[in-house]
Amino acid sequence: MLLGIDLGTSSVKVSVVDPQTRNCIASASYPETEAAIISPRSGWAEQSPDQWWDFTKHAIQKLHRSGKYHSKDITAIGIAYQMHGLVLVDKDQNVLRNSIIWCDSRAVDYGNAAFEKIGERECLTTLLNSPGNFTAAKLAWVKENEPQIYQRIYKLMLPGDFLAMKLTGEITTSISSLSEGIFWNFKENHLSQSLIEYFGFDYSFFPDIKDVFADHGHVTTDVASALDLTPGIPVTYKAGDQPNNALSLNVLNPGEVAANAGTSGVIYGVADELTYDLESRINSFAHVNHTKVQTRIGVLLCINGAGITSSWIRSLSQSNISYDQLNEQISEIPIGSEGLSLLPFGNGAERMLNNKQPGASFNGIDFNKHTIAHFYRAGLEGVAFAFRYGLDIMQQNGMQPSVIRAGNANMFLSDVFATTFVNTTGIPVELYNNDGSCGAALGAGIGVKLFSQGDAFNGLQPIKRIEVTQAAVYNDLYQEWKQLLLQQLNKQLITL
Image (cartoon, rainbow, N blue to C red; front, side):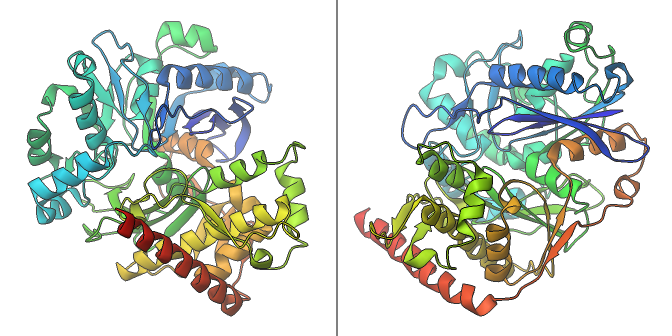
């Protein structure tokens, strides 16, 4: 049996996969309610790594209680995790501060200054990105603002590296992880000397670098005892949630594209060349199957406010209405939410908007007409329109998908959202019964060489295909929405 762990922003999900059938036989999540994001200041976003570990232990114990497998039959573990977070530990592997997570905006100016000083061409051609608001810039913020913590750093990690450390006591990373932190020089295939020396980082902070599919350590006796596992089980796969989501959908080859609409919204395509956006509005990282001899670049569009938009709107209701109930109610509301629209940018700086923070705003509110269901539908439509805005940028950069694959989960569970997404982008969507934790388990199987990458997804078939049917109607609504966004961005520029 293979265990997959998916460390998300809202919860930790774990699954067990049968390596013979490749089927997921049991899953569990913890906590039951969405985990909090700590925001001590506007634009800041943190979570406790120690709490992640606590969630992971609870999720695994809950999974065992399903009784659908024998825990001692688990032979390998794979990890997927929320990308771009910064985790710092001392020499005793104690966490030094909360993780500065993916949607935190405090380090934008540090990344922008590095982009200018190192040189835009140097950054884009070697890092494939501006340092922007990624892990490297977050570490620079700690260095300047929390020197007493910086001086105690033994190793820096991405969130998945931290979970592997807690399981095994060993600290490793990969090219894929380092690239998402904007630490990797793709041209020379090593840590970026220009970036590390510009920020003044210590090379000793970086863990040992291994392949994504590799031995990243073995479960310790103490952890195995606490979690009813066999001591010595290897962790054989670690990847960011979006590369892992693509893996789980068998998106491994150039031109293939995946989408995800969890807390954030993502479109992720695979390229076979070192590609980048001149404005870093979309980003390029090493895909799970990228090696020094095979170029596989994951081109990522990220929208910070996707599922968190739905969650926030739902919280406005005092009746504890469920998502299923809301999705049923909005089916009765006309396309366009009767004039109500939402700009869903209330979760930090948006890369596709050049790291601006226009904020979230509803437009066209009618107190005599609009209900919580209208707000919910407008939220779904606004997120879909944001996807279209970002996809246009991806298409300008050469990504031309003919179909998009997505898991039958999160916002894609809503027929209204899925239909709006397809008709607004003009691209059919295939939905699959797969998710990040199952993908991580299959990644573990690849890492332990139970099967190849090609064989891991034998038999994977879509459960549903959604075709474009009303593109003209949705395109008109999108153009109106886009004008609202541009007006908001221009207003912000004038204010600044």
